[in-house]
Length: 281
Image 1 (cartoon, rainbow, N blue to C red):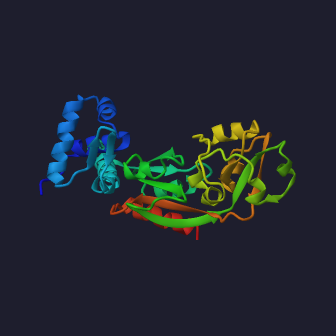
Image 2: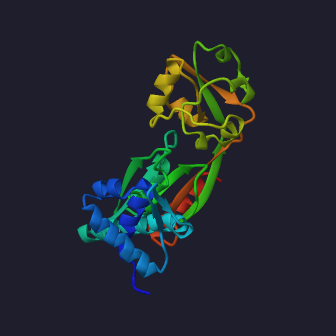
Image 3: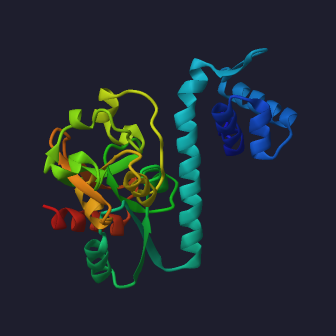
């Protein structure tokens, strides 16, 4: 079998996400007939049909649906390799560490720099939407992540757990209570991705309004638009006078872990994992 052409794989992912050759071609800034030829060439190389094309539109075949995640993983890995090679060409040792809101990597970074005085360490704040993607595509070398995550392609080092709380408007009647339950919150709007709170998703399936940053979420909470579920450390970090947080007694604690790309054997990454474990026994 010939080696896969990453350009064709990128074209495939665009069509798989758009399910429309014209929109995918516009997104890729190429002509639609060129895109069609490239997809047909990829299908020939793989020996399978990736799409079903009908007058009603475009759909993935079972083979195509099974290829999507692997294709994205290939593109992320290729991007990560490019970043590391370019970094190596600039000379010097450098590590970029990601962290989710409420997690403070300061002590780990300090210990790592003491062990490797010539190592340059950068830190980057991540979000729920990109905390794993940034590791897999090489924007960060390792990241402090919050569960739930998809561990595929990662080495995951569990560190500690912390309680989850609901953030309410200070004017809400539940703000007078010390603790609440999921049932108490049943009629309120969840202002975040339900996948971040599987228990809520199970209790109240369906779409929810989404916001990206903690600041955006808290602004809506203060305006009595709904509530958010956060780790306790995040809620404390973003304290403001018009919102309060209360422990949700029937939510399991959230796992915090260190994650980096599976298969990487960097001495610095191994040391960082050891340091993080020792700091969170």
